[in-house]
Image 1 (cartoon, rainbow, N blue to C red):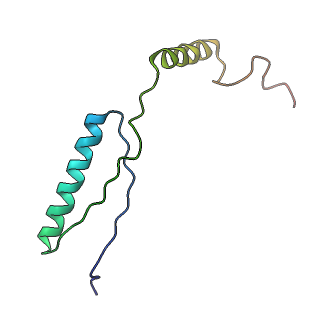
Image 2: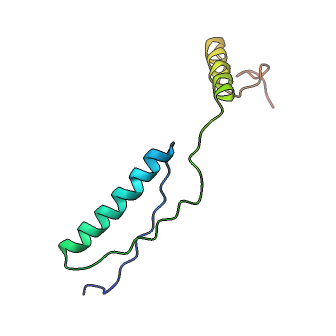
Length: 89
């Protein structure tokens, strides 16, 4: 049996508005063309409910520098200075 109606839900994320708009256009196009190939129609309810994630440059540079310092010191990121394999907690 082939159902008369199908619902497909997905989540889309993009790092900038241009890519987000391209994704929406491609989703609409693919849905329409795929449905058309079966003699059907597609309805896309695409909602842009959040803005693209853009990290603060200064915060990103600080995080990268912190990770680099931690890596050079041999510590795992987030590992306290006093932590070692011989210390029991």
